[in-house]
Image 1 (cartoon, rainbow, N blue to C red):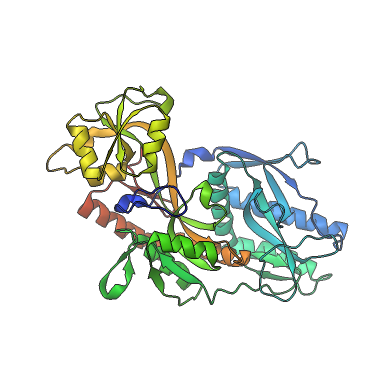
Image 2 (image 1 turned 180 degrees about the vertical axis):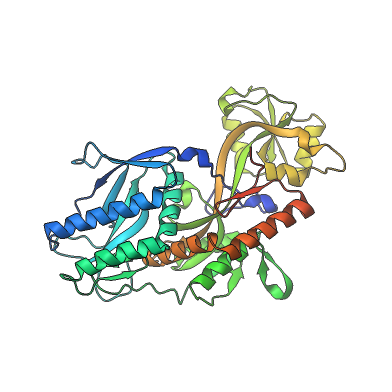
Length: 436
């Protein structure tokens, strides 16, 4: 399905709705880090040093096999670092960072800021995180960092490391406990998932109604496996996108899939794990490749869907734009030389082109525009941040499991053989285009 990018609108078309891209080549990356000055004064200097050492070790161990370097920030006074370690999440900095993973929980008060929506326990708490500063393009890095650390938190090595620091801290804080991958010096943490409402947008092959009303498809399989990992028995419901958006904006603990991540939706959703990715651009027949939209000749006739966000994008870039009511009509217009390129995705081309009537492989990418990602997402409104962490840890475990990867492989074979849709999979995510 191809999707409009507003919070409350969607164009229901078909498979090509679930989207986004992950390129492993972008992970030749270095981050600067510093330790946030947020640890409680009730900790002794040696305890603070142990916590800092443990936190940095968790971060480094999670990234050690992924070509990511960590270097101490040169300017630690003004916190000019890419990553802050043990930054307390509070109402003032909530929107300033990507919150990668929680590390510790403390009783708040006495100059320790409280973290909103941090559990149902009687004692209010402060939760410290590894946090990534927001900048252009950093959302992709935040996603991968969060995923890698969630995977590491599911390992025996992490449990041994965390257990050692837990036992050390118990001398001064006897209630210290490891839960949700977080060391709580304030005792047991609670994140109620009993009232979790799980709801899906209907997308063919990803989440569609099968026999007896049960949802089927790879996205439904993923979510069902995550619920099983958490030993939750919630049913997966389905609804039109307009209702999903309304419920997510007004209620807590609404778990939905698959939701395209956009800047407009950052205030509405927590992003649990990516489901699929799609590459959008201009597709033509016997057209040269242009590295950017800025290099594409302005006299190109560009075809888009009616009421699609790309119509306005093409207009803003100065192209001559014609709109059509279906992908089939767009492909026909391209073949008949009514337009020079189609503004869409490979999945849209595959859906709109009939291989019995035309050599569809001759329609190729002329210029990349952007990448979109469809997620399993959790409503933000009054939702406990520890529920999000439970879901992330479960999702990481599922995506590494033999069961899900067998499901994904079987689904991929079926999509290739029965539908001929270009795609590949990476890190448990469906990419709706052929790999380079």
